[in-house]
Image (cartoon, rainbow, N blue to C red; front, side):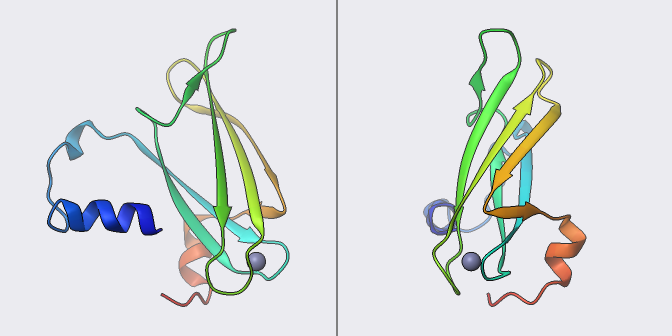
Length: 107
Ligand SMILES: [Zn+2]
């Protein structure tokens, strides 16, 4: 979270510059160890690695900040149009945005 928060403050908190060009995919997970919910943002323009056979892959490591420090590894695969085609996770479970919002999480 810290990285984007510091970016935000760097740009004066919520400046709209470049927002129209952003393709962002939000990842919501629940830690299997402690149940903490975590979200992270994937920038589809800058955070994807191109695969040899076409399409893209993104690796993300999410670390809970409040309850434990388990590293949750997420691998997302996208087609050449940057649409999600498969996803894999270890030490956590994917949840929906609704589940994330409904879960108790200290802010
Ligand atoms: Zn945890």
